[in-house]
Image (cartoon, rainbow, N blue to C red; front, side, top):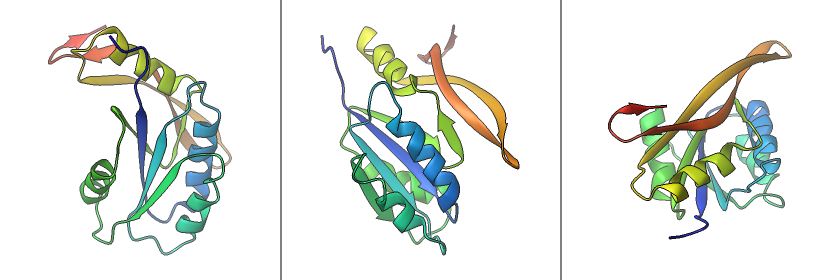
Length: 147
């Protein structure tokens, strides 16, 4: 039984460089750091590339440009470029709780039959908009709902 797994985080973004910075800041503050962060730029016209690469000194960033617009195309491009045992996906307008990745990893380590782990969303206001705060509360899916 493994006592650690590698984690790849995939973030799909399009023309949201400022929000992406908040999402990446939250990944820096994780109690369990991601092994890699794949940022998929889905045909942005703003400074998304520069915003993403500005974090490469603090996170293992892989920047992917996907010209075919649409979340499915972008998310699949990100998944194809992961190397981690676990693929964690978060939106560019979300801020992860500091224990998000730690809790994900624990769920997969405790039960090698786990295929998917989900969590709760908390909404809060920052500035002019609502952001989603992700965290995991041991909600595990094995083809049926279990709490």
